[in-house]
Amino acid sequence: MNDSYWERLRALRAGVRAFRRQHTRERVGRAYHMWYYDSGLWQQTKWFGIPIQKLPFDLWNYQEILYELRPGLLIEFGSCYGGSALYFSHLLRSLGQPYCVLSVDVEPNRIAERARQDPNIVFFHSSSSDPKVAEVITEQRANLPGPVFAILDSDHTKQHVLAEMELLRPLLKSGDYMVVEDSNINGHPVAFGWGEGPFEAIEEYMHRHPDDYSHDREREYRFAATFAPNGYLIRR
Image 1 (cartoon, one colour):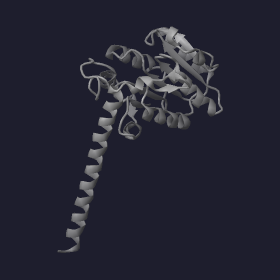
Image 2 (tube, rainbow, N blue to C red; image 1 turned 135 degrees about the horizontal axis):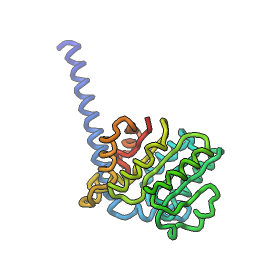
Image 3 (tube, helix red, strand yellow; image 1 turned 30 degrees about the vertical axis):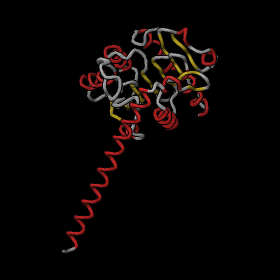
Image 4 (tube, rainbow, N blue to C red; image 1 turned 60 degrees about the horizontal axis):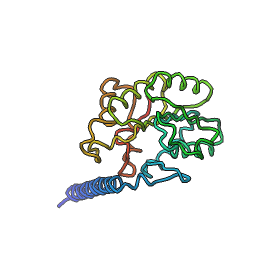
């Protein structure tokens, strides 16, 4: 047997090992994702005592993105208890530059007082698909330098998420970053039978506007589990 035979054999073995690693990664990631979601532990996850309701892997990704992006404006659709707005504000404050966290929700009464007291968070009472939200974003962006980070986590129906994405379309610029959360529901891989939601909204938006965003697959796949599959998006 000549050298080329052994080279082909080594290449075949390396390919098999790589396949096994990837298969194990996907299998374990999916199993952990489903356990974490079905256990309800995500509902108990807190930031400074306030429920944040996110996957820790995503939170780690977000802090790395914010450090690299250094946005002046962070847009959050869906305030809930204010835990994530406070998390983002703490991260951005550590960067030492002017910023604002604009958090939009139709139910402001749930927001914790600790989050309300943060001077860099603006809680705006409105539906996140209302045109007046676009006016507020435009005003805030004009006053703050740097790119924008937007995170969508409010009403999880397909039509509402699609409306949010369309509202942001003329407002986000090349290099801005958007995360569409909870695209894991409706069987991706949790909450089977939910009905069309964020994942399907992303698909529909990409069908309408295929050149608007590129997928940040490295972030999405990094920890093998995310609450935002297909939802890490960079504006082109």
